[in-house]
Image: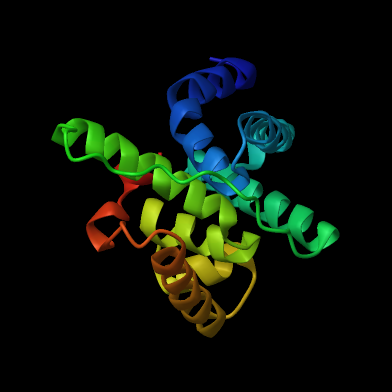
Length: 171
C-alpha cells in the first residue's frame, strides 16, 4: 500500500473524531473544517516522517494552528448568545440536549486559551503536562486557565454542573 492510500485510510478512520476537536477549538463549523483541512494538509506533506500515533500528530497541529490564530488576533470579544432554558415538562433526553446547547454557547463565550485548555483536559482527557506541551505553555498556566475557565462556565451557565463537563457534552 502506498503512502497516499495509507493517508486516505487514516483520514477516513479518524476524521469524525478530529472534527469534533476542531469544532470545540473553533466554535464554528466552517472554521473547524478549515482548521482540520489545514492540519491534514500539513500532515500529508510530512506523512512519511510521522511515527507513532498520526491522530495525535494532527491534533497537535490543530492546537498549534489555532493558538497561532488566537495570538495573531489578540483577545476575542465574547460572543453574546441566547441561553437555552429548561422547561419542567421536558423529558430527560431533551434536558441533556439543552445542557449540550448551553455548554456549547458557554464555551463560545470563554476566551480562546481557556477554551483550548478545557477541550484538551476535559474532552481529550490529556494530563496537565500533556496539555502544557500541546499548547506551548507551563503546567501552572494550564492549571490556572482551567480553574478560571470552570469558574467562568459556572458564572455563564449556572445550570451546568461537573457531570455535564464530559466528552459527550462537548461534542
